[in-house]
Amino acid sequence: MAGAALACAWISLPDLAFLPVAAGIALAWAWHLAQALQRGRRPLRALELRAKDRARWQDGSGQWQEGEILPSSYASDWLVIVNLRASGRRGRSLVLLPDCAAAEELRRLRIWLRWRLGRGA
Image (cartoon, rainbow, N blue to C red; front, side, top):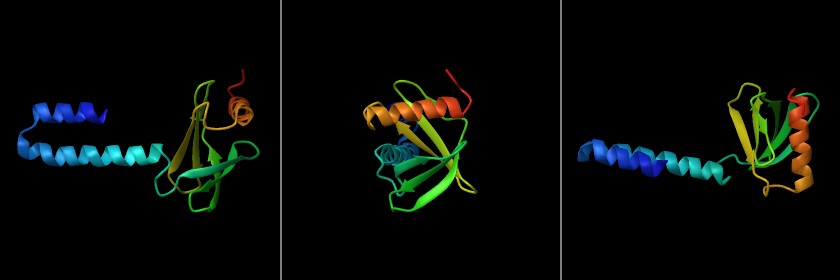
């Protein structure tokens, strides 16, 4: 995506306008890469499911937060997206692929998301 954005900017912008746009694209790419690789300031390290749509999670600094699992969360055989929000804070997303966790734990998470959030079967 970043490469395509840079190519479009290179083709359509004059040199002086291209430089700040390219810097912005590079910064956005670096930020998203850090988030995807769990290298940001607050990566999620642990997740505990609670009753109803509640959960607890541990960030990279070791602090636990409690909040809700949003209905926009998604669970399939190949992808699990857990959208979380602590009260009064911005939402967080945890993306899990099949090799990101133990198979049995990931299966239980998928089942929990499907049934607890009202998307049974």
